[in-house]
Length: 378
Image 1: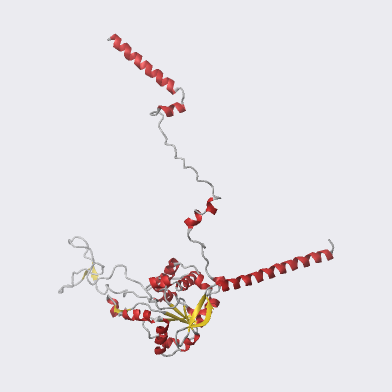
Image 2 (image 1 turned 90 degrees about the horizontal axis):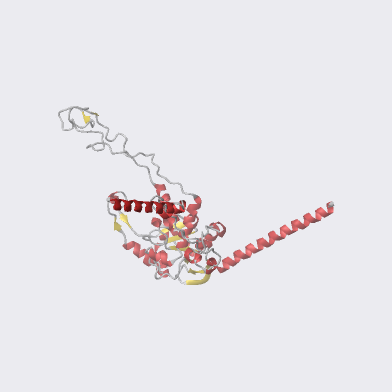
């Protein structure tokens, strides 16, 4: 072909590629808009009186993430170890005495014994973990593996699952939160709440939206810890209350920090240890309007974890008419043949040697003939 023909073909090919890319892009935009319009709308509480206002927000895509309690539990168990401090016993403990074994021949154990005399201590066993004032077995060391590394994708998956679970009232109530008077979850409050600076304002708002019962529950659960932890700066235990998530701290932390059981988090620094305390999903979250809107930017729909199966009812899928119509019928299970001894089983011997039946018959007749002859002779 001539150069003009090649140029024409190349131009047409590039135009077709551009058109397909353009159509694909428009389709993707329309698909994203359809998804956004299809999502349910979330009501917003006013920050003054707690009443629902006319403005609503689309539910961010993160709330459609798959809820995986196994992933949340695994990640929580591992990252909760990352704030531990190293501890160990002194490496000299139990060995700060002069002791030597007496050896054999004195009818005593060969454990090292304290030297000297004139005191009860002399002759006593030392060093061993079974001895009084001896060292412990396998003394602890500071170079133990204290911290755990968790993959970033798995950490992100766990946070998405915990956030998605916070939108299901059944999981919140199963976890023990008092949300009977809350209008809906997720609970979103107007952006002005981020400017609150007084605890009195926070209490008034929590009562207005029906979340103060959860604060009271946490307050009444405060108890003295059982065990030795009470003398190690962990004297009291208390249940978890609401989790307040904000975007800009214009005083909101000062307003809410003194409420029993209430925790505050920045939406850009979500922490699984607070979203799923104890590794259990279903924490009652109160979002500010700006934080709720920021979720869509921080956790966009293109980067969220996807379901392994859209429908997890595998039995129903397999037994559906559509699947059963195309699968092959069930094969008959043939039991393996039991191997039999031809020397003991005549039928098996006949299959191997057809003349065996005649030979056996002949032998039987000969035996009868000899028996009859002996009877006649006698």
